[in-house]
Image 1: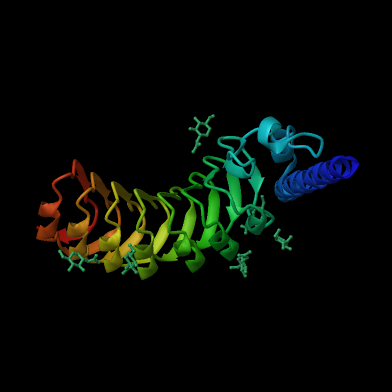
Image 2: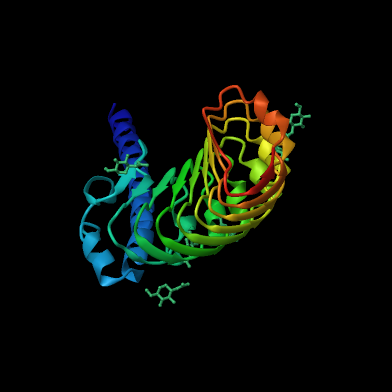
Length: 257
Ligand SMILES: *[C@@H]1O[C@H](CO)[C@@H](O)[C@H](O)[C@H]1NC(C)=O
Ligand SMILES: *[C@@H]1O[C@H](CO)[C@@H](O)[C@H](O)[C@H]1NC(C)=O
Ligand SMILES: *[C@@H]1O[C@H](CO)[C@@H](O)[C@H](O)[C@H]1NC(C)=O
Ligand SMILES: *[C@@H]1O[C@H](CO)[C@@H](O)[C@H](O)[C@H]1NC(C)=O
Ligand SMILES: *[C@@H]1O[C@H](CO)[C@@H](O)[C@H](O)[C@H]1NC(C)=O
Ligand SMILES: *[C@@H]1O[C@H](CO)[C@@H](O)[C@H](O)[C@H]1NC(C)=O
C-alpha cells in the first residue's frame, strides 16, 4: 500500500516536472520571439521607439504589445504597425526567430533599406504589406519561396530590378500590388501560373516588352492595371478570355490596337 502511494507521488511529481519543463520551454520561445522584436525596436528612430513603448521585457507580447498578435499556441503571428511614421530598416528584424508569422503589415511608415534574404524563412507568411515606405533594392529570390503568400503588397516604394520567372511559384497569390516602383524588364510568362490571382496592379513602373499571352490563364482576375509603363506590341486577344475582369487599365504604354 505504502509502496503504491510512493509510486503515485513519484509519478505525479515527474508529470508536474515534465509539464513545468514544457511550459518553461514555451515561455522561453515566446521570450525569444519578443527579444527579436525588441532588438528591432531598439534599431528604430526615437519616434519609432516611443510609438512602440508598450513593447517591453516586462509585459507579454501576446496581450500587451501594440500591433502584435499571437496564434492559438501563443506564438507571434502578426506584426501590424501602420501610419506610425516609423523610420528604420528591416535589417535588425530577425525573421529566423519569428517562424510563425503569418502577417506583416507596415503600411505607410518611413522605413527604408531593402528586404533581406531571411524573409525566405517565413514559411507561414500569408500577408506581406510594405507599401508607402522608402524601401529600395531588388526583391530577394527567397521571397518567391513563400508559397503560402496570398497578398504581396509593395506599392509606392523604390524597389527595382526584374520581376523574375520565380513569381510563378507563388501559386496561392490573390493580390499582387507592385505599383509605383522602379521595376524593369518584361512581365514574366510564369504569371500565367497564378491561377488564384484576383487583383494585379503593376502600374507606374518601367516594365517593357509585350503583355504575355498567358495572362489569359488568370480566369479569376478582376482588376488588371498596367498603365504608365513601357509595354509594347499588341494587346493579346487572350485578355478577352478573362470573363471575371471588371477593370482593365492599359493607357500610357506603347500598345497597339
Ligand atoms: C491592422 O490593424 C488595423 C487597425 O487595427 C486593422 O484595421 C487592419 O485590418 C489590420 N491589418 C491586418 C492585415 O491585420
Ligand atoms: C536570429 O535568430 C536565430 C534563431 O532564433 C538565431 O539562431 C540567430 O543567431 C539570430 N541572428 C541574429 C543576427 O541575431
Ligand atoms: C535610410 O535613411 C537614413 C536616414 O533616415 C539614411 O541615413 C540611410 O542611409 C538610409 N538607408 C538606405 C539604405 O537608404
Ligand atoms: C534563414 O534564412 C537564411 C538566409 O536565406 C538561411 O541561411 C538560414 O538557413 C535560414 N534559417 C532557417 C532557420 O531556416
Ligand atoms: C506553377 O505552380 C506550381 C504549384 O502550383 C509549381 O509546382 C510550378 O513550379 C509553377 N510553375 C512556374 C512556371 O512557376
Ligand atoms: C496557360 O494555359 C495553357 C492552356 O490554356 C497551358 O498550356 C499553359 O501551360 C498555361 N501557362 C502557364 C504559365 O500556366
